[in-house]
Each structure stands twice: as C-alpha cells, then as structure tokens.
Image (cartoon, rainbow, N blue to C red; front, side, top):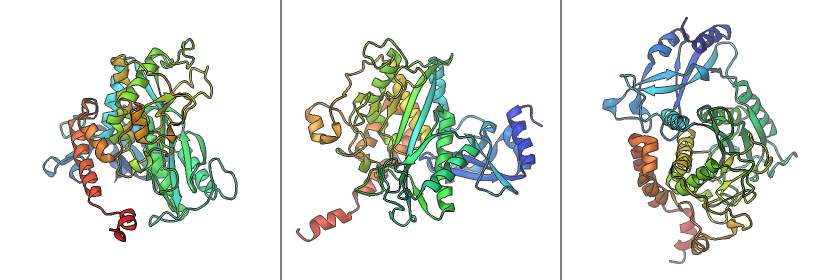
Length: 447
C-alpha cells in the first residue's frame, strides 16, 4: 500500500467495488475531455511515476518530436462512474500532466488554474466559484429539433425533460457533486443545472464531469444534449454565469463589508476585483467565449450582456451583485454573466481570477453602477455614443485583443496563449471565407 491515505482509499475502493478499469481524465487546451483506461494493477506505479501517453495527438499540447507526456492521477478526484455497470465497474480520476523530467506541462489547463489559485493564496485569498450552466436537448445531433415548448421554470407536461434532469442530478450527486438548482430555462428544450459553490479547481473538475454526465444521460434516453452557445437563431443562447468570491485564509468572505457606504455590502477588495473584471473582460473574452458561435449570443438586444457595467438588480450588465440575501456574509459574491458553457472551465476560471487579482493589485476604482437602464435595448452604436464600453463584437476582434494582452499571456503562459491565438485566428479566417444561407437569401436574387 502507498503512504498516501487518499491513494490507499482509491486502491481499497477499487477492490471493494469490483472496479476493473480506471479512466484517467484531462482536457486539451480547448476544454475537450481526453481519457485513457488503466488497469488497477498499474495504479500504484501511476501514483508514483505517472502513466505515459503521446501528447502530440492532443489539441494544443505539443509537436511530435516533444510528444512524451506523463499523466499523474489526483487520488482526491476518484469516483466510480454511476452510468457504467456495477460489476466490472469503471472509475475515474482527473490527472495533472507533466513532462518526462517531472515538471508540470505548460500546456495543461488544470495546471494553469492551479498556478493562478496559488497566486491568489499568496495574496491571502481562496477563490470560490459557483457556475450556472445552460444547455439544450435536441432529438439528435443532426439538427435542432427540440423536445418541448416549455419556458423559464415551467413545471408542466411541456417540460418533457424533467426525468432527464432528475437522472442527471442524481448521477452528479452519486459522483460527489452537489447541485443547488435545476430548472427549465427560457428557450424551448433549454435547461439549467447550478452547482453549489466550492474552490475553483474542484469546480472546474466538476464542470467537466457535469458536461459529460449531461451528455451521457441524454444519450441513455435516446436524445442529444448540446452546450453550443447559440444553437437556434431566434431562441436564447446558453450561458455559464459564474458566481465568484474571494475568502481570506481564515474562511471569512473578503468581498463582504456590512458598512459599505454605497449599500452593496461590498468591501474595497470586492470593488477593485469587480473593476478588474470590467477592465480586462474584453481581453479574456476569447477564453470565456472561444468560438465563432459564441458571438451570436453576445449581440446587442440579446439576453447576454455585452456592456462593461455592473449593478445589483440590472441583469443587462456584465457583472451583477446578487441581492437575494444582502446582509449574509456567505452569500456575498459577484456574478459574471458573459461566459458560455463551451469554454474550457480551467482557463476561464483562471482568466477571470487573474483579472480580479489585477484589479486588486492595481487598486482600480469601480465606476458607478447602472441600475435603472435597460442596456439590452441599446445597439452597439448607441452604447458607443454614450461612452459605454462593450465586449468584442466577434471572435476576430476578441482574438486580437487577447493576442495583445500581457495579463492573458502571463496568466496562461506562452504555450497556451500562443496556441489559442493561432487556433482562433485560423477559426475566424475559415469562418470569414464561408458563404451563409443568410447571404444567399438576401443577395443572390437581387444582385
């Protein structure tokens, strides 16, 4: 047996639960889950020395001549997969990726988040997040035929997918991921499951698990679940609102100040952090909204905020200070409303944390809140005339802001930053060369 109690627990559980394979999970730079299976007899060696694999086949990892990688499983993330059979069961662990000399691999998104969390800890803070992920159910992956015509919070026969959501929540809880809410969203066949807040690294692992579970349970029911940001032109897009807060190392909420003269119960730390989010959101947008399709959701007049503003009750602002329990220290947090669920959660959480910490370090002043104006009713041109800054209009604009961002280069490292700039420029250039049905409908018969 190993000297590590968590590793011992894994080895004992594997025997008692009849686990025959353990899947090693990690993500590529874009946030796609990668996995390979290890037999239990290999695990002790894997804990000590990692398991080798070819990194050249992983998006954004490395060139063929530098392809040897090692996956080190994190014993604290071990779970038995509930959707696999109980006999000959299958377990999983998330992994950290290292090079053959044992150093953390700079292209590992999990390492990027861990490094950013360590920076926060050095500043005296622990970073907690609670994301709300929306998604659609469709009849299959070939089109966007919906399962129901339900709306926000509906509980009727229209909410055809209640059983799907219930099975998904139960499966998540079997895997140790507590769920706070689940409900039908605004769009037909659109749903949301909110995860209970925890530290950022555990939550990024939970988000990856959540997305896989949603898809697995949908497949079991013969339908398809999609986290595409804007799958249907005339219906709401899917977001990943991220509630976030900094706690001090004694467990007190560093964002909370009951004597805030503005009445928002926000501390000086919270206000500088929020100002950092507003300042750097255009630079990290290519991380939190990383696809061409992401910007079909971030449009003026849509339901996703593009305006670099904040408020308590105004949901058209980029950052909201939820006011459900305004005098509760534990409930004090900020909600960033622009990210979408197709983001890589490790890089997205690292980017927003880095922006907030930069706000604290730079002692940024927070602009006045925008409480009474519906910013959704204004076009980008009207917003510009009023001096309201906005998020980038397209992936093309976002990637150029990201490319020039010193903060993003320092946070993600040269390897990931450089890869994303190249990959996203290529995606944008490819998109620019396409001719859409909209253009044919509008121009072909008249030009």
